[in-house]
Length: 103
Picture: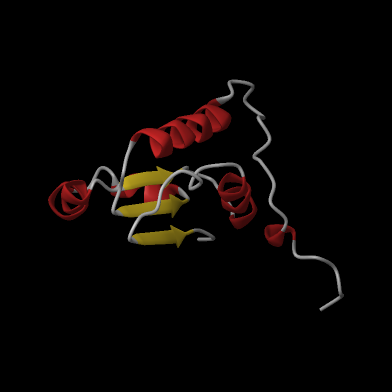
């Protein structure tokens, strides 16, 4: 190793290259959801987490637990760290939290 800091370890928001504010809008929605709901389970991560919401297993196993899905396609570890530091889990105390990112 060269002694340089791993960029994935530094919390960083996604750059809005499309100019539509989509990523920040999702982040704000997740923060609002965390204020309004009392989930037993929270998933946070990248597109693999985001897509779980569309699976039958989500409806069967996780919806009854009032699970929240905080997945955003394209997120890297540094983006999830930023979201965690900026309120997504601040107002909730789930029994289980699962982070899945870095694929």
